Length: 224
Image 1 (cartoon, one colour):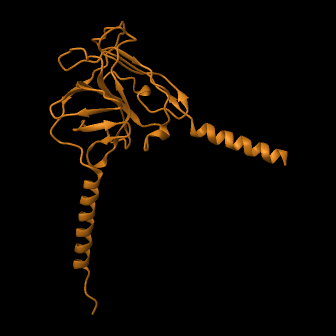
Image 2 (cartoon, rainbow, N blue to C red):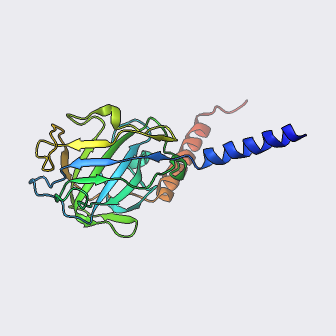
Image 3 (cartoon, rainbow, N blue to C red):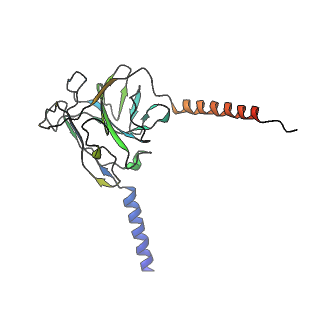
């Protein structure tokens, strides 16, 4: 009887530990600039994004985002798993950051899983505001990810939960904080396409499905 109770307690403890398992991340970026090599000011938005499907990272789209938001066209396969305010306090160099946010759980962001590739986007003109940030048409952005030139791709992958792993490092040739690197970011400008509401895609899918049903019925030969 006592053994059964002990086993039950151990099972409950393990279940509780699994539920609260976390991963510890660090983002070491030196240094974040505009396409014109102007350092990004503190307070601007930095997105950590996971490529859920493995299809590659999409261009950022107009919208207001928080952790768990998605972009990437009809597949919605790029998920915001971290959203931060750029802060150079720890480095003392504007544009150079060493972010060490509190540990997070993969289960806190539906769809985020171990092995998914990661990338960062930074917005020189958009502020981080209480857990969210907006992207507007015409905004410039910088981007670095798993497949970028110079990337140590082994570190730009979501780690198992729980774990404490290497920092996600981005050190460009312009590094100002004593780092040496050859990581090459991509720069671009946000277009005029916004992220449609999921309900819009559901409506389109419903219409397409209805049309397919009608066509199938028309092609079905009449029974003599």
